[in-house]
Image (tube, rainbow over all chains, first blue to last red; front, side, top):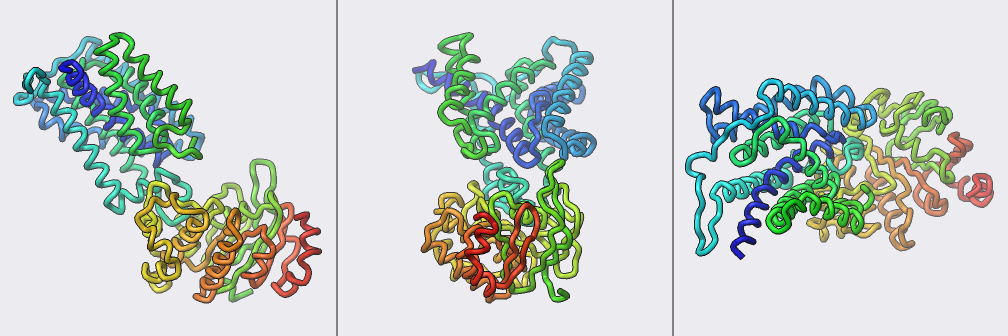
Amino acid sequence: MTQFLQYTLQGLAAGGFYALAALGLAVIFGVLGVVNFSHGACYMLGAMISALLLQHFGLGFWPALVIVPVIMFVIGVLVERLLVQWLLKLDPLYNFLLTFGLTLLTVDIMKRQFGVSSLKYEVPAGLTGRVSFGSVDLSVYQMFAAAFAVLVCLAVWMILTKTRVGMIVRAATEDPERSRALGINVARWVTPVFGFGIALAGLSGVLAAPYRAINADMGTNFIIILFAIVVIGGLGSILGAVVAGFLVGLVEAYGQGYYGQLSQVLIFVLMAAVVLIRPAGLFGREEAA
Amino acid sequence: MSDALLTVDSLSAFYGEAQALRDVSLDVAAGEVVTLVGRNGAGKTTLLRSIMGLHKGTRGSVTLDGTSLDGKSADKRARLGLGWVPDDRGIYATLTVAENLALPPVVDKAAAWSLEQIYEQFPVLHERRDFPGTKLSGGEQQMLAMARPLRAGSRLLLLDEPSEGLAPVIVNQIGQIIRDIKAQGVAVLLVEQNVKFASTVADRHNLLAQGEVVESLDNAEFQTRTTDLLEHLGM
């Protein structure tokens, strides 16, 4: 039981990173039709920038939680304006290749600058240690990370469901062409949505920084799991991305806890099972498949 | 026609090398219901998509109330008064019925139907206003699809096969709604395969075959020649 609760918390914390990043991936895919391969690299940058802010400016975790998403938003806006927008009219494959290229470039630049060994980062004061609940003791930081990710997902969900902007983003995510035909200027939302999606990936990186190894390669495995999450949740479904993010986090944690090396396999077994039973994903619409 | 609301002049459309429309010209006056009748693949939907600005690769010109739509994006055309009612109804699954109605920006405050007017005309939409859009039946989705541009104040609906797949009693209801819309001064360009239905709602008809308008006639003439026309079109 103790172990089970610990794995569950671990899973929810990891699921939090996945859910935040997958949420970003889903809105970018929905509104732009771009499968952003660089999302893992953006997660890595989020963690790297956190470490560098601490190393060079003495800015710790709490300021990073605000500063890094802002930096990543700006990077996202620049990438969209300078590069992505020119390929939007072509086959989506071109933007996939562009973001793939950007990933290789970013990863190698970071390797050249900072080497392959991990940068140091510490769990912020006040979130260190473990708390005991009877016989179970749980990491304070993991509890924080899981709760924080849930709160951010809820906040984004409120924006999406309760505001006009959110309604437009949902409509454009579901069908950009139809939304244009109904008078929505979808193009106006493309740049901010891209920046927002990238900022979420960066935020996910900040949350991961205190307890994951921070290095140029940390996004490589991450992006593969993100793609699995998006497939499980249903391509183009925002709710699906969040639910599948937490689901995969849990599967991974139980896998690691009970079966060791098998955990990665379990994620893809889950993906295969979902695709077999519901080809459009858990929350995808059938016609989207 | 100088009093035309919508004028389509020598419109051609292409899918790569293949030509889907050949020099189509037609017009629709304010408050008029005009049909495009023809079999599958005649180019009806391509014509609607071209008018809406969704089809890339067109030649010719489209004018709405004296304003040229050529080169304008679909969202701009919608904001100038074109109302899009696609053949799949185009209802958002992730939006509630009320949100589906509220989504299109109001393009003409004076012409826009109030929510009360919409719910009076379509009581079922009021009942189901908090349901996800696609939880409605086919007929209800069709009503929602038609209500959406009315709420925005569109002056002309591009209506693609509204009777398709609906029970006869619902088709009659849709017909009544089209006549009501017309009475409010809204024009309709209607794509239909159901010739009988078309003749109960329209003022004029354009017969489309292989991407060309082969005949244009008023409703009286259309009704007397229905059998002959159907044969001619191979429908």
